[in-house]
Structures are given as structure tokens and as C-alpha cells.
Image (cartoon, rainbow, N blue to C red; front, side, top):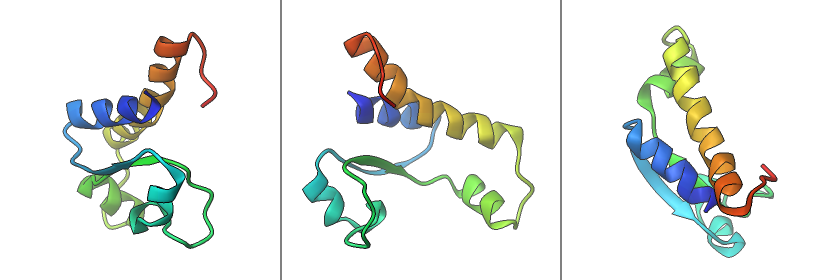
Length: 90
């Protein structure tokens, strides 16, 4: 449910979803989620927002709209957990 929350928020906000992994094994074998770089990713939703990428790189000024969209996507997973289980671990 957690990853579905991220996916749904990204989709509704128009951020193209590149991939979703629901297991540690899949995350270890997918470069978008750290691959075998030693990261501790156990699941994840990868999306691509060109504007946000350019803003983080410093080629465009960071906007409030991008911060808001990113924050909504991040919080979507936590909200999905809270709705489904009555609490969220983050």
C-alpha cells in the first residue's frame, strides 16, 4: 500500500512513473533504486520530474510548486499506510 500511495500521487500530479519495486531483491537488481551500490533500499517508486531535476542541479531556480509536488509524492506513501493500517511507520 505504501508504494501504491507514492505511485498514485505521482500519477495524479503528472510525474511520469519510471518503476516500482516491492521487494528487496528487485531493488538490489534495479539501478534506479541503488542497485548493488550498498544502499539499504528495500522497495521504492521511481518517477522522473524534469523540472525538479533541473532545479536540484541548479540550472533553474527552485520553485515552491516543485517542492510541493515532491512533498505530496513523498507523503503519499505515509498517508496510504495510515489509511490502510490506522498508523504509519514512514
